[in-house]
Amino acid sequence: MSEEKTANAVERTFSILELVAESTNGLSNSDISRRLNVPKSSASYILRVMEKRGYLIRGDGGKYRLGLKLMSLSRGQIAHADVREVAKPILEQFLRKSRMSEAHLAVLDNGRAVYVEKVEAENSFIKMDIWVGHRLPVHTTAIGKVLVANLADAEIVKILDLRGMEKKTRKSITNQAKFLQEIAKVREYGAAIDNEENSANVRCLAAPIYDANGLTVAALGTSSTILQLDETNLPKVIALVKEAASKVSEQLGYSGKR
Image (spheres, rainbow, N blue to C red):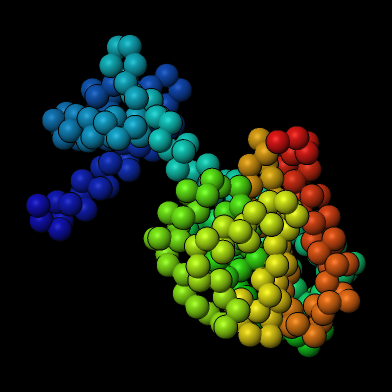
């Protein structure tokens, strides 16, 4: 198929999808062909493919409506957007109470921890190497540990097999059995610590955010130098991280029962 014909087929596919989405009662092949001025044979081929892949469903009378596949594709992004919106003011509140330099939000995506939100304290002289969209390993980060802690050990091992266990610093955990022991502590404690495991002289803390079903949908965390997050300050900041994560969870409908 030529490039021009391929582009034309893609254009028709999206036009059909948009037209069906605007319809209340569904549309037949004939309806679609007539409204878009597309040959019935071409429309029929595209409709069959989209039906097979779950993007459209055909009901009684041969009329097509949107399928559940579109909802499943958008569900994760919608959830992430909701978490960010709810979390941002709580992250800002956390910074005021903790006097930390930054706070962030991360989600699990294809075996990586991905930052989706970050707030920084005004006039802070400490700047962490963190940005929205930054992807990090789960085995060397507090956010990563929290995000996989709700998974079964077998699922965690699959991620480790897929992504490997790179030694980022001399303190990185690079053994699967030891990492699973670390995750057991995270589950018991309800929070995670990255003790210079991803970057030298940097310590990170994180706690899980749960949705209404009790599933971990994000991790709320903070990072700083080991001087700011020293042994004296650590317990207080961990408590504030867990408190902030709990507030976000409550606003997402989590009742505390799992």
